[in-house]
Image (cartoon, rainbow, N blue to C red; front, side, top):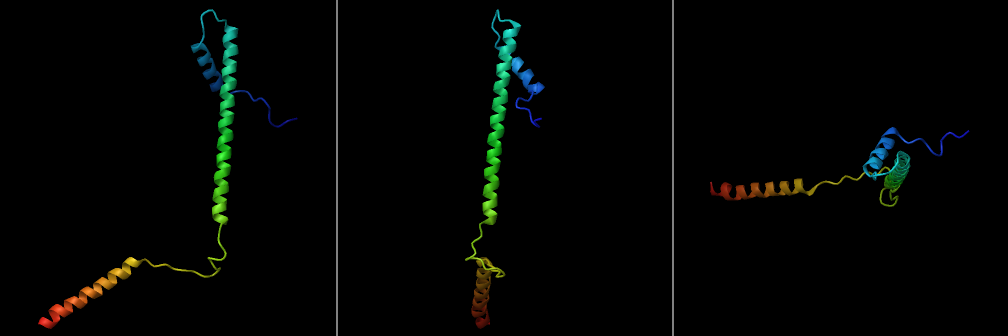
Length: 115
């Protein structure tokens, strides 16, 4: 016995939506049976569309997961040695320190010598 049905029953929302669309496009003189057949065709179209969108979403998820796995696994063994930690310092604090020293030196030159 199969676990999954090949043709699952459509949801009630899909049936209602298909029936609304079929009634909206109903022509004068059309019988109820014809309208039902049109609604069934619309319902199959909606189900097919939903199936395609789910397949696209699954494929996009697979690709996104594959890219994220590649990013986490892509480590160059030549550039990074195990156990070696490299710290990079920003240049701004050093620049501010040099400017401060220069300002103090200029202050001492101009105001220290004149007094």
